[in-house]
Amino acid sequence: MRNLFAHVWAFLAAALILQGCNLWEFGGGDGLCELTVSISVSAPSAASKAAEGTAASKASFDASDYVGAMTDGEKMQTLRIVIVRPDGSIEHNRLLDFSATAKGAYTSVSDVVFEVIGGERKKIYLFANENARKAAAAEGVTESVVQYDLASLAVGGTFPEQELSDLRISLNSDTDELPGSALPMSECHTIDMPASDYHTDLYITRAAVKFSYLFDNQSGKSYELSSLTISKASSIEYYLPRVSYAGDPLAGDYSVSGFEVPNTGNNNYYLYKKPLGKTITAEGDDGSGVTALEPFYLLEGKYLDSSDARNYSMSVTLDGTQYSAYFPDVASLPRNTHVVVVITIGTYGLNWSVDVFPYGEVILNPGFGQ
Image (tube, rainbow, N blue to C red; front, side, top):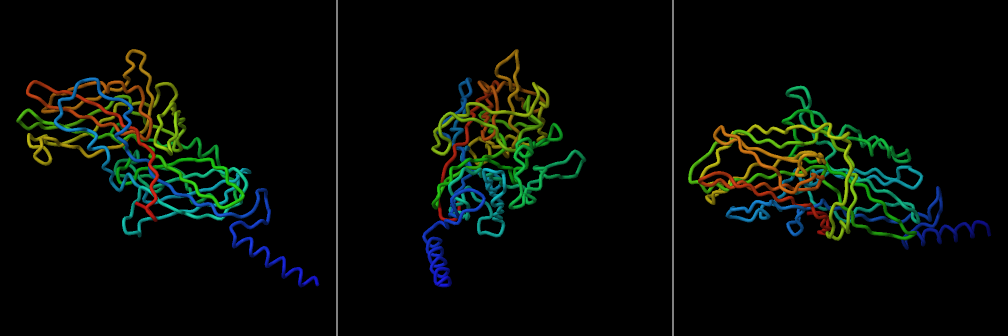
């Protein structure tokens, strides 16, 4: 009789597993369930501008045409998903490496399945391109952008929440920038996992401010662009974002209401210098007169200039002459923004126009990824 009871109980337990959740309880929670996550990289959205240049642009094109272009470096080449239970223990630490796939880099990944304890609140940490490298302080040497071994986060161990919350990314010199070949990305989400199978859409945020410079040459002559600068660039930022939103980022209808940086006052800000040897021709890149520089990527910052609320200024040097202007209406530069600078070269001088586009989180579900 005892053996019969054991067989019946085993059959019932197996049936419950096949139906979705295993109601065995251990360590809190309601049992094993399937958690399915879909993750997208935040994508530029021209529909919602954070700020626009006050000077009337005389450019012969729309700057938003350049906003949507994304290189593989702005996509996920690797993605690490770490799931943490309420007691701080690590439930999963899974690395997805897309280098061997057809595309090699994706803006979204759909239907990644985990078996987790149901009926509890969890944190899901997302890290992309963790192996990215940048210039080190020593000349000719590179180092990891993220100075932490995320693979060492062992399942069953305690997640180092405060340590990772305080982890910083830094730049070493006034010409250093984040690697455009693989941008660091991160995010932390909190979900309420029901005692049943569950699907959630999440996003991951680029830990960078993207800059695009476009020169609309209407002068009829060529110029030599030797350098550009940006004042008050930050040399440090938190690896994980410390940001608050007004609205819903997942719905794409939101704005950044506040964010934190590790800078003490106005320390750790500098004049970013980009040496160039670029000819700005009258024909431009494709005969339209427009020359686009390769985009570059810096850290977020919120310098506060008591004498001028615009805070940030820039310069370009053409044919040995330096021209300068402020970024109009740009009081801070949070991560996940794309600064598009249009410089129109006319017969009698330069005209500047600046648009700051926020990255809107767009959820895509193309099967595996896009």
